[in-house]
Length: 249
Length: 260
Image 1: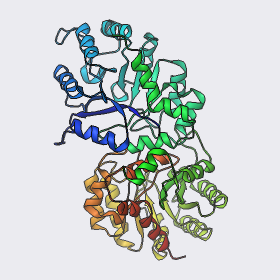
Image 2: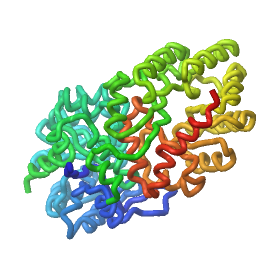
Image 3: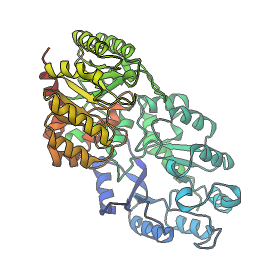
Image 4: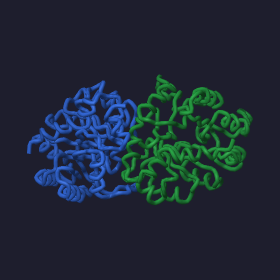
């Protein structure tokens, strides 16, 4: 059975009109149900996570005492001195075993421009802490521009849609530091097969879309794909494990 | 982990009967990497799906007849595995009648209607299609996306042609409550849960509201990925019996009631 390390998972958030908050225990139960060994987790849904300092503390607390949940805290440039310094944010993340930094440009009102993000991105680059970005927070062309500025830093593109295969192939070919999460909305007939054939399996990551999505959808798309076993293992867990091994403490 | 989930997790054929009631062949505006019918059948074999009922992507526009020709070739190439929905562009009442009769004679098992053409489902040119379909107890797969107008139009059709099996494509993509209410009100309405995402809890919600007997599974292959779409049923928190109704029995009944 292919081991799974889920890059797109989370809990403890809620969204407009929803009363229920998914608990950490639900997340672990779903992981058990589908035999997902580990997950990179955020507070999700994150629409109402507007105090990132509190949100990150909540995340770290929930991830403590288990190595199955790897935190992916939100980070923001401290250009207005309203949150901790960039150094503090990154140090705190590393102390808590973070596997990536979640950058929410649109939600947190900042831009991927050198005059805004240089200090934060330089630090992520220095520590090789991957940047996790959702498609809803940054248009693909801006995402590519950002990846071009930091060719040694890994950028994870999450919530990839099924209509963008025509873009994903040149994106992954041209930017070897971009990683695509095959979770939630990536439902392409022959899509994984084509990406593996034309680009290789190294830049693809398994993502379940939990808690809003049924995880077996992304799992079945991967395990039934017509690619070799080694590629499935890389996509399932190997690539994300390799990214996390590169993080400098 | 139950047996079905275990097989799915390992990538083995699921070993249960399945009919995919919502498939497509043909090119679309965004890139679909594998544009051949064999790739659908390969996917079906890998998962253990008996049958996929397909229309052509041209169901959305004026090239519908070309689409029907292509679907017919697919049926011929894979008899019993690929079945066909007739696509219709309502040029005129006469045209619609000729098209429906022609393809039913050729073995198509239902009709697919799409409103991407901007025409209402109650367009008078479509009347012959509904009449013939009603006489023969055919399924009609309507593209829907929670639009009020769609519900109003389909309500009119459902009430006028009560022998039809009305399949509401993409049920729950939005307004899940509305879809459930609509199905409760119209006993010949079936909810097809095809759409790109796999919202946790949607199938459980529909089953609780209307029962598993009127939920059907479709994948939208090769618009979408068949295995990914199957995952939402395999993984959901329903009994094996309920999953079998959704994946096979309900669709089988719809096909069995057709009068040729």
